[in-house]
Length: 192
Length: 193
Image (cartoon, rainbow over all chains, first blue to last red; front, side, top):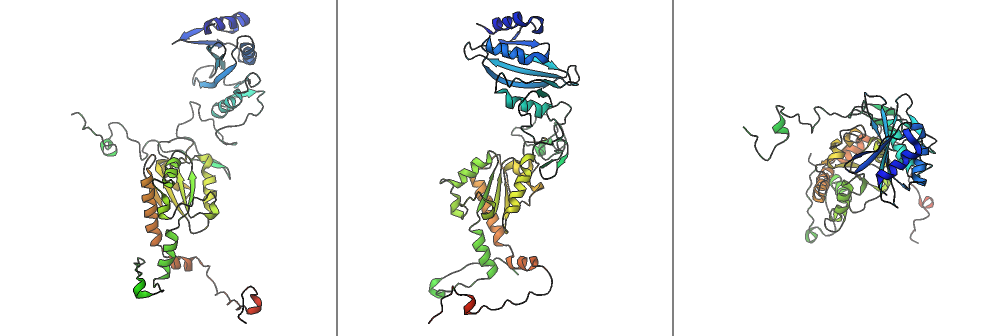
């Protein structure tokens, strides 16, 4: 049974909640219209469609668009070797959706990472703490409005952060800059 | 006054006596047994392990005793990327090391943050520790680390130990002389009959 057939079965069960399957480079993606029902859809996909493996759970920041967040679930069936991508959208005001840790325990740390990096909360998660940054770090660093250099912060006795020098740092060369060749010598001379 | 006393010991001339300066002798002891605190945080730690293994053999320079305890170490080798999450832990380990102590920043990440210009990485361990030797490379080869160790040894050899020790004593009236313990006070010392 191919991923497209399985996506159609998902559509038969949930109707307009599931979008028409989109194929790109041999991969099938469906979009779930209501993020509140994601756990229910995932449970059906696992129990009835044989998607017994959650490959990945991640998030996208569509900064400047509405809704801002896209949460992406990569499903895989070890029985039928079919791969299905399930996307759902969450608005910034809500920033919350049900957990799927009850469906796949593997979602536990993935959801913690999404929470840590993007600030999207998963309702019903057994242990929703930060996983990479420390408790008390005030920002969500994978958001598009967070600068790559970081922002200064201070948690006495735990950790501190400073903004990293990007422009003008010791290894940064501006293309075409006056000292570009001196800073970054090339094996071959520039074309003249 | 120069601290670079040259050691010459000829047993035929000097018998059982070695004449040198106390500074030089203390430094000689110190520099040939610099025990590393291996602060292996990333891929540089692999090269640090290679430096300890038989091909490069850091024990040729007296530094084979990698102590995973700061209490028994002399030189902290920061080998790898120091994240902000780890930074205060590194500093605490450094503070737990007994004096005298030195720091080698091994590789680009420990020296400057390296390629990690980001919110999560400390931009050089010298922001939290006094670094003695920086080693370039990503990661540096074991030879580079051994060269850094030799440079650190040369530096240790030049240190004015006694002058530093005198300076570090607190100012004030001289401490009263300790009472000389009699034979009764030292019962563990065997007295000749």
